[in-house]
Image (cartoon, rainbow, N blue to C red; front, side):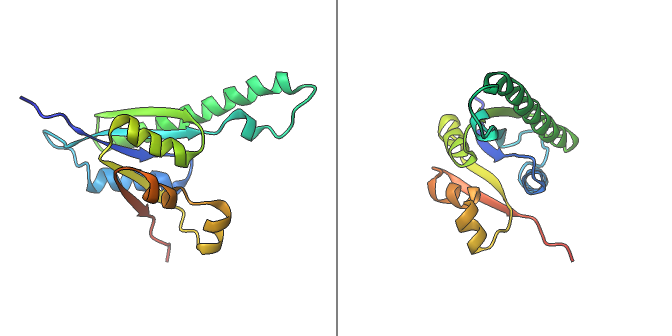
Length: 158
């Protein structure tokens, strides 16, 4: 009887930090073998159209579908890039999920929905002030996700 694989959620976005976290995870935690322990779920939080369009009124109805289509193209481009990275590292048990919303909530909800054992996120390396002003997805997830959270930091260039 085959044991069901655990789920590992990796948050991806268009930043170099999330792609580095994905590559690090593939290199260190998901080495290709005859029986890998995890099923990988790449999760992207698509911004809502309302967050991208700062106006309402005449003309908004024509603009919203165009912006939404652009956000969907961006989501597809990011998830395709992430899947290609996985394929190049010979990791094939990969699923993707694009959910509209705030990345903090989207990632924590993906953990719950898929009963994930691990959540991997990249770190932008913000200091305390920037983190307080901008908010930190990794910090939020570390405190709210109901699983182990790995925060992968990209080494600083020398």
